Length: 179
Image (cartoon, rainbow, N blue to C red; front, top):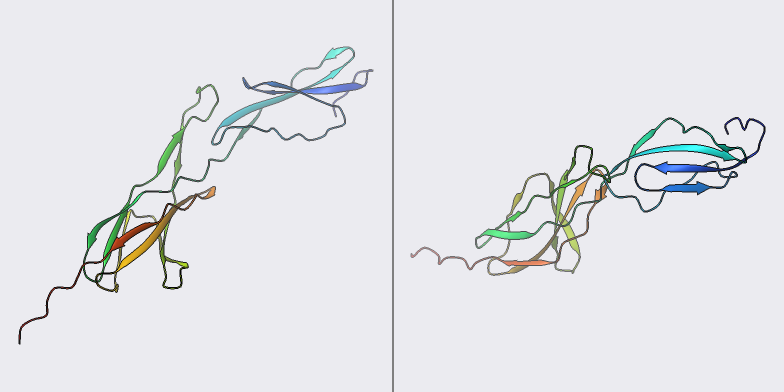
């Protein structure tokens, strides 16, 4: 609590840059600012108020909100054989302004990892790939069989949602050699 200079503090003003000015009661020693944007830089300063007037603002506090988890990539099958499927997905990379007024440079939200799961015979999904590439080949599959997959992307904030279920089919095997 700052020096009140002879008059009790009646509240605080929290200035969130160009966003808004918030009045807070003097009993509060901490305050959560709601409705902030993801991956955004904010400059916050506080001043006390009493019956005499408003005191000077505090030093600016710079903070940055985390980005959102990435959206689910779209999955496609780029190659199918009688015992394998090669899957490919779009890479996710969002760029979001870091300040509400766009005066600061932008920051890229980088996907760190992709996770692919394949549905097993019991109906549960099991992880078959975790990595940072944009394709993966699944081997040792049965011929002429449909397989179900889903994919999600992760960044430093966490995992995004799972994609819709994608179904891809292996081909029939070619005929055996003549004897």
